[in-house]
Length: 78
Image 1 (spheres, rainbow, N blue to C red):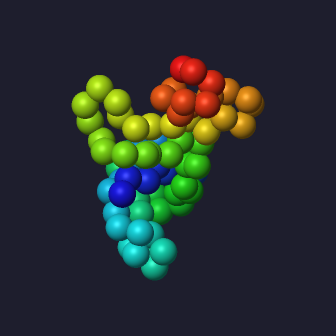
Image 2: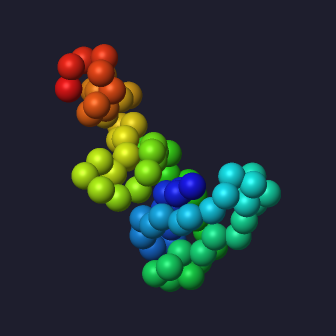
Image 3: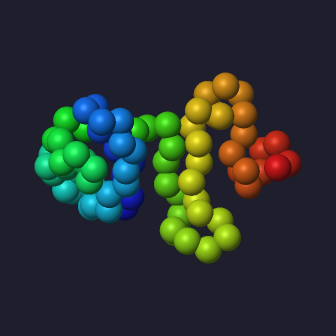
């Protein structure tokens, strides 16, 4: 699975690939830009489905929380 993180030191947003087990056990994650371990999960976007191709599978949760709709969800016709 892919997980989004933000570095609290330099503000770099980055993605890692890790198993659910690794994440739940507290895998050590470092910022690729400044190597700081002071990072937090970014829950504003989530990955659904396979990566690549024409549909990346990314859903921006910021749009959903403000009443927006995820493209392709079917409930609003988009």
